[in-house]
Length: 93
Image 1 (cartoon, rainbow, N blue to C red):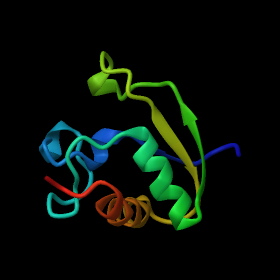
Image 2: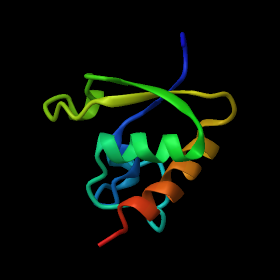
Image 3: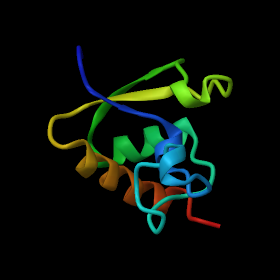
Image 4: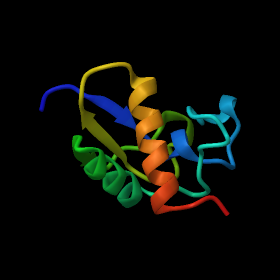
């Protein structure tokens, strides 16, 4: 798996604003998403992935990690699919 789509937990975090790094709409975002939750969501969507110990450039001190998803297509579609699965796994509080 050479290239893929990079997914950070902040993309799905309902506590963040769009300009703070959230990439999905607030109605499908979840509170405090974690890398294992994102991995389970990708697996349930049938998307292969790999985990890396890298931080989002805006949140470099958090050391949350990231997931590289091996899929083609628009990133927004993948983000929506993963967010829908995250909603099932980690419902919004």
